Image (cartoon, rainbow, N blue to C red):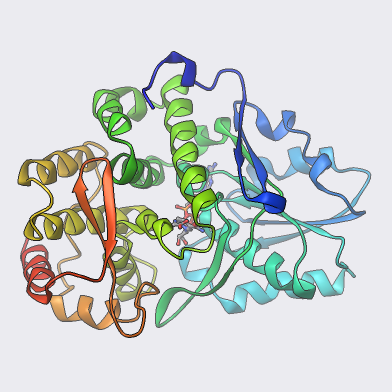
Length: 370
Ligand code: NAD
Ligand code: GLY
């Protein structure tokens, strides 16, 4: 794929996530909350919107206005990764039961990845499964978490430990919602955008390097290109391996390290995207030790991550032993063996359990002394 003006999303664009009978569209564009006709994805007479106290005042009414012929209830959750847990998930189930929602109800996730992951898991499990729609409002959720059907809540002992693969009916990405997103959150989303360049799309990595200023200024065309290209990359991988039996694991570049950081900080320290940024640098360092990646590519990776004011080293109070203790609980551990995502070059990644422990130890020692 090369990047030209034809990939710019203007006007709205749709990408299909190709999963047979579970296929669904991703609608991307300015004004999509109003234009995508959300009601076409609400088949029954009832819907439940899940949002949080920050996002609801901004965008909830626009959705309510479109569903006036339905019984639409709402759950407004507290805002924060630390609330992505079973206690808060239960608030969704309580509302569904109290308001007599049946198997024909549709759940609507309005928010970032926290709201999306929780709503998706509620949809996967309420009465053994009801339809849901993703309306992601952060950059991170627009380029990653809303697409692909991974749903989950955290446990105090581990990130995203309780969840299901469960695909939405549609993903509606209104790029206008990014206008209200705080800069730190915007940059955290850029970590997952950079991830696609690193794992599978060298041209996109070059394009990102060349378009840092436009992206930081949230230039609408640059943003639309970055979101569309990210969704294309993600849709391709998910279509090839919906339930992560193999290649989908490359989407987790840096996440084993990142999730360890988030759990260590009990979900109140670095943002998810920030932790992933640190993890991607660590994965790149390990890839150099494995002999696959050139040292200068680590510097390019760090350079792009730095350009978006993202961290490149773990929190100072976190030590190699802390990483080791948390990484053994990673979901990529199979039969007691940790698998890591390593870079072969910029634009190509591989999943492997075939790495030397001393490479990992050296990577942790270097990162924790930085
Ligand atoms: P988030 O959901 O916590 O949102 C970040 C912050 O931005 C919150 O304070 C939120 O209220 C606020 N916000 C959201 N939209 C806004 C808007 N338009 N204007 C103003 N403020 C807004 O964080 P996130 O980065 O979106 O998502 C992180 C979560 O996503 C993590 O839990 C992570 O594990 C998960 N995730 C899941 C997948 C997946 O495949 N399911 C992939 C990546 C990440
Ligand atoms: N965010 C990783 C995945 O969707 O597989």
